[in-house]
Image 1: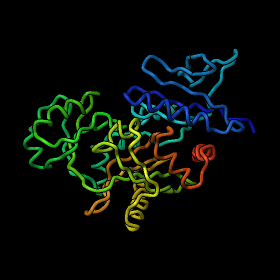
Image 2: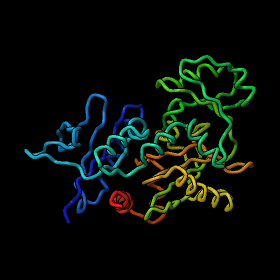
Image 3: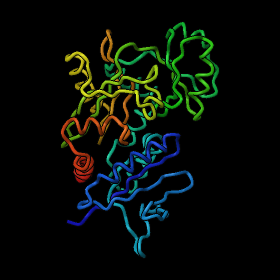
Length: 329
């Protein structure tokens, strides 16, 4: 059987570029060479470029191909490792849909819904998933901080409604921190979401698709080095602990696993998804789903895959096998 040409797309247009590149490099090292010709493809505002043996080769967007050794090489499929726009919000998926090229993660609608924390909370909350109380502050719009605090209480979290890796998130404890937190959340030109504080144990659960059926992997407990699981705690502070399996009650563990699979189905999920929750006295509350989860050495999903008995070669291969299976049906 001829090897498939796979584009591992990374980069994107947000502050998560650096994390995306690390994810792509890990995937590139672990895709089985006997099955795939894997190429790193940097998606940037200035252009789309294939990284190959020290060369930076432009991508022809008319058919998603590039010139190699005098021949046009067309990609058979895409492994999406872009965190943030345009790979996690549905924009790039729309291009691949038009081109008829399969990709290994969620489609346009589910990506767009899950990428907007506000829209996702409304959608999943209406389907019975427990979510924090929240208020949306539109970019450039006036707001009444005292009114919002009276409704949601302190402390609260203010975060970009679009974005990831905990960039721009602030835990607001006092009224005088509120306005600066809104500015920080909107720094990437997105709306700000104010959420009520959820007390409990933060956990994360990965989920994959096997023959079209969602399968939760494991529940990981997050013990952040800082006050919450911010960017530093996720990527640079060695004191953060990520404990698999999570040290929570067995009933709560099972509920997180079951709820993860339910949310995967509600979002019409594809590929690998990681969903974050807060487990407390009032039950299991959704924090957010991640339809293009981090895949670097520091990321949770690869750790859960290894815990479940996968090696990373077979785990990433499974994602592509499922992608091609779904594309052919």
